[in-house]
View (cartoon, rainbow, N blue to C red):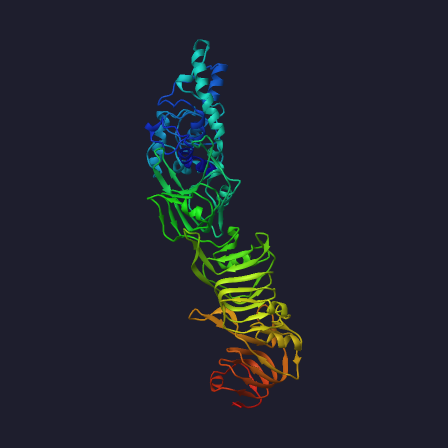
Length: 632
């Protein structure tokens, strides 16, 4: 209950300042906020000293009270309370104060004695002594009772003097009161969406609901909120006002702050998220801080008296040209237009997780980078997608902007790094950047445009190779047809054929035997592989391992196997053979090769002096033959 109670009170003035419903008739009390519902339904201001309640109000009096009294009940407080306030929520306040040792009549009237008690309580609890019961005072008061106690017989709430005693002799005054209150009631009913507590949030889950298309037009936060996921502000909402032409005004507002009835900001809060996409038209962030990047795809987005600790990217010219920021606001990052030919913001990626989703079969037709991305694992682009009813799939390694003459110019080129990227989507292309790694293309008509590939391009079918389209691109490695049938399970082998594929340059960085393997062929371990780790200098660690053993989950060796071959050539740098037996000769051509707990029943020949000098046998090992340099 306490969170709701505090939330409902803290943001009332903020809501009213946005909807134009706030009443300043009680400005003498300098309220921090006012009751949104009461302000919308009560026409006359509450007097400083309310009249004594009638002992026997007539039926007509009861009816008048219903039309002019605030809607708070004895179990909720949904407004700021101060001298002159009346109602069931005041009764609740008096009950809470009595639970703290005060002796007040629970009559629902905020009089002088209640004021004295409130100020005394505030003083004893290090609160601002202003006699106004706001969120901070309630935060202290509410926890003192486990259950809110309703008075058995609350006194009849007092109504303003102008509408009191609607007897037969005061019938004209009663009619006047009815005439005044009726249109205000209709206005309040029309604008009730703006003042419901669903738009006032103090936790991440409620905030996500509030900014969704099923939320409210205004979202008020009462504390800092942090997200590790992307957020989207979406949906079209009416703010209760009218445009000059009489149509309903459309607006959306994120308000991480509280204010008083003079619109003076009291507290500012921070919303932290990696990315916030603005899809609601006429949206704004006001009065607080957003930490992260903002992507705007709708017109008339505004930053008002707020700070953005990140970048603002506009996805079209209209969004950029209609953007507005006031002089009190600050954007610490960039403000720029990015055109990525994307049909939805889901295709714009800012991190590794986004990219994997974007190129998956459940992604989008285009994956557009906004920065360099690095992976330590293989990636696959798969799934069939359409761009304007045409089959198309694209990885955009760039951002661009549109000039006034409608021409597009590149603003940034990005680098994508991965050991291997498998291209399986039909009509694929990669444009305007750099790819570090090897591409494995299984699709026809793959187009590589204005891109540098620091690696090789391998085609898994003859058709993929013959239809490849290289447009102004550079490939530092090979372009050839390969077989990759074993790529999914190449690291675990039980037979000769799979072992040969696994140790090839198209295999895995680690090859695990699950049985003895014998071949009469000469074998070669080749290719450079990353093991997913980093060296001490921050660069990728290169490694290749033939594991002649199995182990349990505690890394205890459970079985050792024998590889029999007339000759095994080691061409991979920093390769190692571990735990088991090699029957045959080793020819080592690469530096940094290690032999760990392995028995070699044969000779070890080095084809270079560097290979010999950097060779490192470790643990329990044995070599039955010679170890010597052999260059011919």
